[in-house]
Image 1 (cartoon, each protein chain N blue to C red):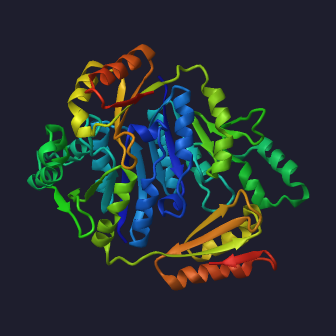
Image 2: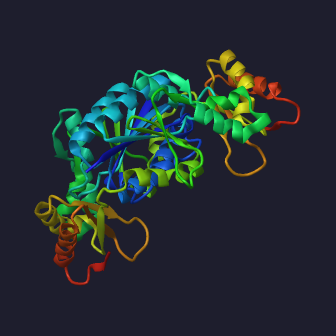
Image 3: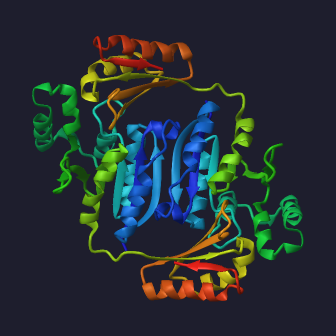
Amino acid sequence: MKTAAALVIGNELLSGKIADANLVVLARTLREAGVELRRAVFVLDDVDVIAEEVRALAGAHDVLFTSGGVGPTHDDVTIEGVARAFGAPVVTSPILADLLRGHYGDRLLEGHLFMARVPEGARLVSGETVVWPVVVMQNVWILPGVPEIFLAKQPLIRAELAGESPFISFAVLTTLDEGQLKPMLDRVVEDHRDVAIGSYPRWSGAEYRTRLTFDGLLEDRVRAARDAFASSLPAGTLVGVE
Amino acid sequence: MKTAAALVIGNELLSGKIADANLVVLARTLREAGVELRRAVFVLDDVDVIAEEVRALAGAHDVLFTSGGVGPTHDDVTIEGVARAFGAPVVTSPILADLLRGHYGDRLLEGHLFMARVPEGARLVSGETVVWPVVVMQNVWILPGVPEIFLAKQPLIRAELAGESPFISFAVLTTLDEGQLKPMLDRVVEDHRDVAIGSYPRWSGAEYRTRLTFDGLLEDRVRAARDAFASSLPAGTLVGVE
C-alpha cells in the first residue's frame, strides 16, 4: 500500500483568515486511489520551515502533496522551499514561460514570469482537461492553494496513482452510545486486526447515536467485521448498515 | 509573543470521511488572543505517533492544543498518547468520575468511565458556562473533536490566554493581479519587515482581483504599511481599504 502526506502552506490558514478546503479534497482523491494519507502538516509562509518539512515528509512517505504558496509575490515561497529540500536551484521553466506568454500576450510583466519558476529537475504533469501543468519535483506534487484550482488538479493525481487497490468502507448506525457499545466493539476490534474500525458519536439528531466505520483493503474481512458487530448489538438498537 | 501549535487527531479526517472544522475555530481564538499559531499537524489514531508529536510540539511551543480522540472506544488514544509523551501513567480522575456518575445515574456503565481517564498530574479547567472540564497536561490542552463541543470550549482558552496584545489586521483590495502589483508590493514588504503582508488572488467575482493583508502587533506600523501600499497603486486600481 502506498503512503502519502500533505503539506498545507499559508499564513492565512493558521491566522484563521480563511478555513482550509483542500485537505479533505486531497484525502478523498487518495482514498479512492487506495493510497493511505498518513499525515498533514500546516505551516506558515517560511521557506526554511517548508524546506525542512518537505525533506522530512517526502522522505517518510511515497508521495507528498503541497498546497499553496505558488504565486508570484513575496509570500509565495513553496517552489524555493521544495528546491532547497532537494538541494536544487530554482530555474525558469521555458515551457511555463511560453504558457504565460501565450496567456498574457502584450500584457505580460516581469512579475507574471515568477509563476514560471520551478526547482531544477522538476517535471511538468498535465492532462487533456487540465491546461496549466502541475510541477512535480521527485515525489513532491506542488499544488496551488486556491480551492477551485486545487480541485481542478485532482484528475491528474488520480491518473498518476491509478492501479492501486481502493479501500473498502462499510458502516453501522446504532442508537447505543459509545459507553454502551464499547464491550461489543472491543471484541470485534480484537478479532479483526486487519480492519480499521472507527467510532463516531453524533452530537445532534435523533435517528442514531453512534456511527461505526469499517475500512480495509480486503472486502471479505471488512464485511465480516461489520456483520460481526451488527449482529452483536441488542435487539432494537441497530438503525442501519451501509 | 506566545506561540501555539495544534495536533488534530483522527482517521476520519485523513481518510476524507469528514472535513475538519476545528482548526479555523482555534486559529481565530488564538489570533484574537494575540497568540501565534505556528503549526498544525493532522495524524491518525496511533498512540505512538501521537505521543511523539505531542512531545515535539509541546516542547517547541508555549502551548499545544489537541483535537479529537477523547471518547471511550478503542480508537480514542489521545489521553494515552499525551500521558506517554510526558512519561506519566493514565489514571481515573475522581472529579470526572463523579461528573459521569451524576450525568448517567443508574445507567452508568464501565464503558462510560473510560471518559474519566487523565494523564496523572493533569489539571481540569472549567468555567461558568462550560460544564464538562477540559483536561490540561502541563502546556497541552486536550480538546474533544466533535465540532460543537470544540467550539463550546473556546471561552476557556480565551480566559486562560487573556492579557496578550491582540493582532492588528488591515487589508487593501485592488483590481490589479499579483504579477502587476508585485513591484509596488515588494517595496512595501522591504520597508516594513515587522509587518506580515499577505497577497491573495480572488478566483471568482469581479469586484477586485487581489486582497492584500497587513498584520502585526503595532497598529501604527501595520497602518503605515497598508497606507504605503494603497498610495503606491495606479489611479483607478484601488477598490477599498479595510
